Image (tube, rainbow, N blue to C red; front, side, top):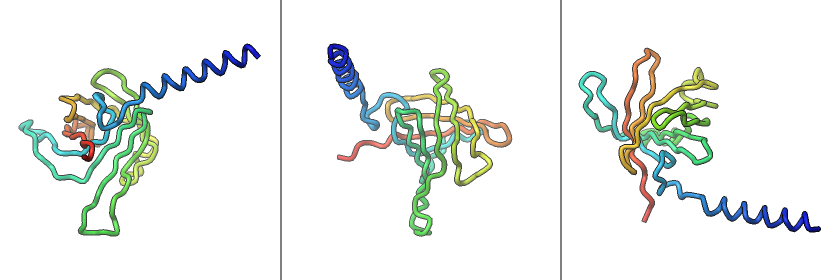
Length: 149
């Protein structure tokens, strides 16, 4: 009976700690959050080119991610689709590896691993870079979506 009581106390304290450590995703100070692609760096001159893309990335605290694409109103049948999803591992303070489980736009990427470079410029701006099929880095700007008020 004493062991059962101790187990109950330990379980309750672990649950309290887990709930106390949860962070609201949009208020996070890490890369965890919901991001919209807002720019791409020109590969030749390094200038930021603003883009009005419908590309979004959801980076979860449980080390999963989703990218989704809104196709706009030109073709309502397409609507919004999940472009890819998978898991990620942070390797350093500027490098992460994405493990793509499914990529709906390029099935050749299903089951692939990709190294990305990232820099959190401030709480609202994330720079990410990935290598394309030709081995060139593609640098993108992502902006955190704010909480609705």
